[in-house]
Amino acid sequence: MAALRREGRRFAPLISPRPITAVRSSPIAPTHEDEGPIGVRYISTQVVRNRMKSVKNIQKITKAMKMVAASKLRAVQTKAENSRGLWQPFTALLGDLPSVDVKKSVVVTISSDKGLCGGINSTSVKISKGIHKLNSGPEKETKYVILGEKAKAQLIRDSKKDIELIITELQKNPLNYTQVSVLADEILKNVEFDALRIVFNKFHSVVSFVPTVSTVLSPEIVEREAESGGKLGDLDNYEVEGGETKGEILQNLAEFQFSCVMFNAVLENACSEQGARMSAMDSSSRNAGDMLDRLTLTYNRTRQASITTELIEIISGASALEG
Image (cartoon, rainbow, N blue to C red; front, top):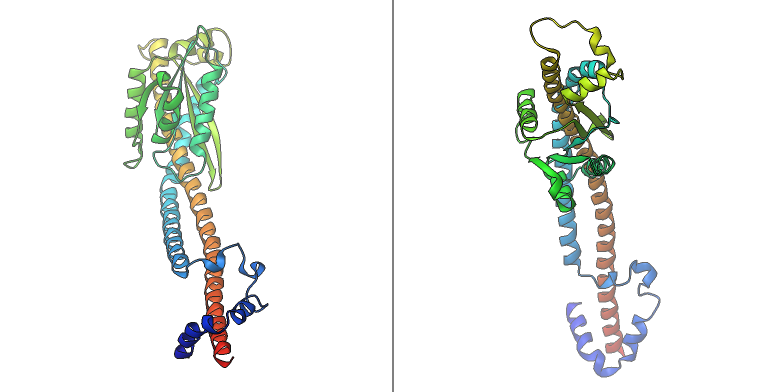
């Protein structure tokens, strides 16, 4: 058969080219509707095999990343749930006043250091920019404190002059209260503020997180709000024991409140990050599977078209020899 094929290729152009053209244009040959996309028949099977191999490797990576994110989520979720009891008493005592009017505001934007976790970082940055715009004015000053590489990359482009402090690689080591309290103390020492607005993603489930803003007021603003008879007017109902003044107590409460809120915010954002990464990697794995199915279909069509072409050439050669 191989010899017949070679002889057919050798003598067919010399005898008559018409039979070859007639056979190739016959209904036996695949039409464009059978081939799928235009040009599929002429794709090299080696190219398609290489593409299938790369997609399979990507699918393995995304599945492994989903499993790693699930493992990290289980480890952080328990800490996040336990940390919610730290800041709730402060909210009941000092309140959470996001609409308080102050001259110096600091927006603490919490994000992740790594990507591939959906849009949680973009959401935090958008909310931070909105808060910055609302609290900006001729007699007002608003600055940024950034935690995480992703928020840094987005905010540094158009708000570089307003960035007061940048902290990255927060999750390089396992998160604990001591680590976060040191960061909170560093922020309090380097930033002047009347109100700290902490922007983070509150974890609800693997597929659900809510952008949240928590407000921590300075001791002076807390005392001012308490004297004005607002929501903080109940502070005078508490008895203070010891030799500390009311100002010193409010200073200690404000610092402790900020460290507790920061600890909870960092853990909640870490949970949201891992949950979003799980969802993103699951979607990527499914998309890779769909792409692999399409590539397999393309490969089979290409291989079938190649076999059909070879058979047509053999038949044409045999017809030419018989003629």
